[in-house]
Image (tube, rainbow, N blue to C red; front, top):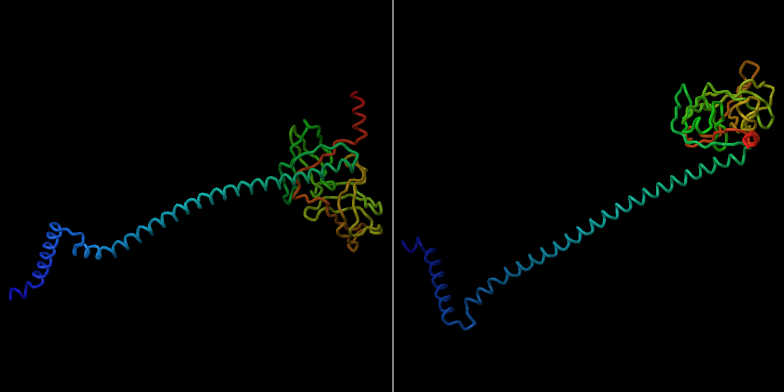
Length: 281
């Protein structure tokens, strides 16, 4: 009964005892071909393979990690460089666009025999009530109220309020704006009044006069404000059906007033400038 209950314990103890005896014998008479040693080596071989494989995987993973860290750092540097190049490209494009705009503005000096002063737009008021611009030039630069303001290709308004270093421009489409004009093709005269989003309306043109859509409208030079021949716009609509003696003529300005960034202020005619220079001499 005792042997039956402790059979497993006795078996394990016998194996341990046999192992100790073989180990003692191996230590006393080591021949280099110990059975126990061979058994231990055989038993350790699979574990060694697993261990070596694990170490190899860890080394490979570490190398990949180091490589990925390097790639990530390089990628970050490339993105930063790309962002800097894109910013530089945007600046070059902006500079190129500004150069083209200024070139068109300067071409006005070849078109009209006047002295111009270039200015930059610093503010806009394109509300329902008021259609005005603010520019960065004023009295210290020789500007005075009433001077015409142009962009390429034509007139956009006139100066109304002038301070020392800034001025207010009343646009053609403002309802308070009135310009003496004529139809370039037929020389029919009228007054162009601002009509807000509709552009301008030419008033006091009799219905019997020949005015067509597409006709070019220029300043007539009858007032002391606008010299003759400045481009104003094109006729976009003619209505002779309404009651009254005059046609209803709508004119679309040549310039896109909402996108104006630089302007040229017509300061004086060339002849007047020459006379002033001669007096100064």
